[in-house]
Image (cartoon, rainbow, N blue to C red; front, side, top):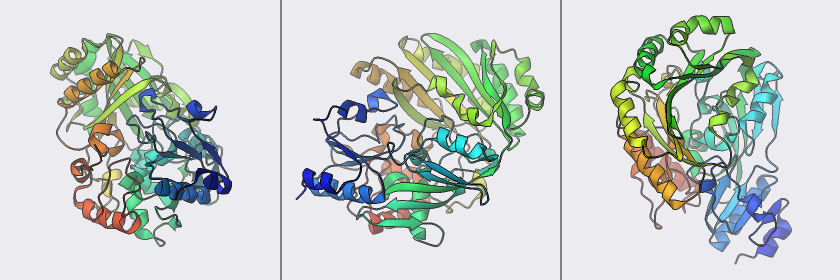
Length: 459
């Protein structure tokens, strides 16, 4: 029988319930519409606290959510009436071993902390593209970003994890210890436990890079598509680009976030044909490396409302960036003056990512790349949320069919509904690797204690 007072007496961290003054603060999330009113928020101090929280939740019949950075637009780091294991308050540190080129990163850290700690030693690791994203959620879903062309996915650069499983066991998982669990978590999401520490490979990194935002008028879409076709066919592993078609408060534009892991002179030389198209805004410059993952932050402000939907890129950029599709985009978004709507086409070189065998990890190794439909709005009303969802699904029809990046999946596609788990989307995501994941789920979480992401049904 669960007893909250007994739980509190053994717990080293902080327990917050609806009766506490800091309860509302404890629910805070990046996406305001992703907040859920938990019965208990457990700010854990160590893996033993995590094990206690899992036991209490199981005994009390509370659904568990894991909160690292709190960046899920789908609400997977929140639990209505459940228990949140929150790593962000105490388990948020990063320790770098420059000799071994390793970063020891606690599960509640964000990428800004990792970037800043690593570059002090002339090193960097693969991260995402928004630096206030949590390390944990991005990593267990696969994780990619500006350095992926050179070094692959975040999971490809993960050498060990400390994981608290459903029965409260605290396990080290790597290639030789608990290797099945190590395989499953690298792309299998939060299905198997709570990761309290990651160990990542780091790589030598120049202190400054060429990066920034360009904005073009919408009538340049065909020229940008033609440029991107030529560039993408010959892309170098130390480059990357995100090209978005966007309508902000009624005003359409084409935006490009560019990156070359070199000097400004070299970057402008490589991307001369893009600059020749004539951006109306050019913020690209040489910046300190640790600022690279902040260039998207103005478009990802904390506390707004968000809806995500991931789709696949076409075979060529011109298949995504053309007048026909752009006109359809404008038609769909024409009656959404209170929403900012974007389709962000992520052109990160995939040769390194896809060079690994299909069964190296659960993450798919045949993806052409992803685009993210992201819709932002301010007033958190059901009407605005419905409008965003309908627009996102209409825009998804412009993309090729297929299951895209798991971290971009909206709630309706991934989460259990009305007490029943729909495995269809999960099977599509993992395909041939799904039966192996089911066997691992049966071994470590047969009762589906962890069920907030692409939920794997035990074999």
